[in-house]
View: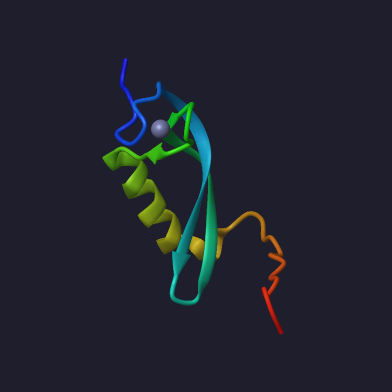
Length: 76
Ligand SMILES: [Zn+2]
Protein backbone atom coordinates (compact mmCIF):
# COMPACT_ATOMS: atom_id res chain seq x y z
CA UNK A 1 0.00 0.00 0.00
CA UNK A 2 1.13 3.52 -0.76
CA UNK A 3 1.96 5.89 2.05
CA UNK A 4 1.81 9.66 2.25
CA UNK A 5 4.95 11.55 1.29
CA UNK A 6 4.40 14.04 4.11
CA UNK A 7 3.05 12.11 7.11
CA UNK A 8 3.48 8.44 6.05
CA UNK A 9 -0.25 7.90 6.58
CA UNK A 10 -2.20 5.43 4.40
CA UNK A 11 -3.17 6.70 0.93
CA UNK A 12 -6.36 5.49 -0.75
CA UNK A 13 -7.77 5.99 -4.22
CA UNK A 14 -10.99 7.98 -4.35
CA UNK A 15 -13.03 10.39 -6.39
CA UNK A 16 -12.62 14.05 -5.43
CA UNK A 17 -13.75 17.52 -6.43
CA UNK A 18 -10.78 19.47 -7.70
CA UNK A 19 -10.73 23.25 -7.25
CA UNK A 20 -8.54 24.85 -9.89
CA UNK A 21 -7.56 28.45 -10.28
CA UNK A 22 -6.92 30.45 -13.42
CA UNK A 23 -6.10 34.14 -13.68
CA UNK A 24 -9.76 35.04 -14.22
CA UNK A 25 -11.36 32.79 -11.60
CA UNK A 26 -11.84 29.44 -9.97
CA UNK A 27 -13.32 26.31 -11.44
CA UNK A 28 -14.40 23.01 -9.99
CA UNK A 29 -13.97 19.62 -11.62
CA UNK A 30 -16.11 16.79 -10.24
CA UNK A 31 -15.26 13.09 -10.08
CA UNK A 32 -11.51 13.45 -10.42
CA UNK A 33 -9.64 10.24 -9.73
CA UNK A 34 -7.07 10.87 -7.00
CA UNK A 35 -5.17 9.27 -4.17
CA UNK A 36 -5.83 10.89 -0.81
CA UNK A 37 -4.03 10.52 2.50
CA UNK A 38 -6.40 9.30 5.24
CA UNK A 39 -4.35 11.10 7.84
CA UNK A 40 -3.55 14.62 6.57
CA UNK A 41 -5.76 14.85 3.47
CA UNK A 42 -2.91 15.45 1.04
CA UNK A 43 -4.11 14.74 -2.51
CA UNK A 44 -2.03 13.03 -5.19
CA UNK A 45 -3.12 13.34 -8.80
CA UNK A 46 -1.95 10.99 -11.54
CA UNK A 47 -1.07 12.23 -15.04
CA UNK A 48 -4.56 11.31 -16.38
CA UNK A 49 -6.20 13.43 -13.67
CA UNK A 50 -3.91 16.39 -14.41
CA UNK A 51 -4.82 16.02 -18.09
CA UNK A 52 -8.53 15.89 -17.20
CA UNK A 53 -8.27 19.07 -15.14
CA UNK A 54 -6.45 20.90 -17.94
CA UNK A 55 -8.93 19.76 -20.57
CA UNK A 56 -11.84 20.73 -18.27
CA UNK A 57 -10.55 24.31 -18.28
CA UNK A 58 -10.46 24.25 -22.09
CA UNK A 59 -14.11 23.10 -22.12
CA UNK A 60 -15.20 25.56 -19.43
CA UNK A 61 -17.93 27.05 -21.65
CA UNK A 62 -19.67 23.63 -21.46
CA UNK A 63 -19.93 23.78 -17.65
CA UNK A 64 -23.13 22.09 -16.40
CA UNK A 65 -23.38 24.06 -13.16
CA UNK A 66 -22.24 27.36 -11.76
CA UNK A 67 -21.62 28.05 -8.08
CA UNK A 68 -21.58 31.32 -6.26
CA UNK A 69 -18.63 31.63 -3.94
CA UNK A 70 -18.93 33.82 -0.84
CA UNK A 71 -15.87 35.95 -0.19
CA UNK A 72 -15.00 37.14 3.31
CA UNK A 73 -12.27 39.67 4.02
CA UNK A 74 -10.42 39.28 7.30
CA UNK A 75 -10.52 43.03 7.87
CA UNK A 76 -12.19 46.02 6.26
ZN1 LIG B 1 -0.53 12.46 4.90
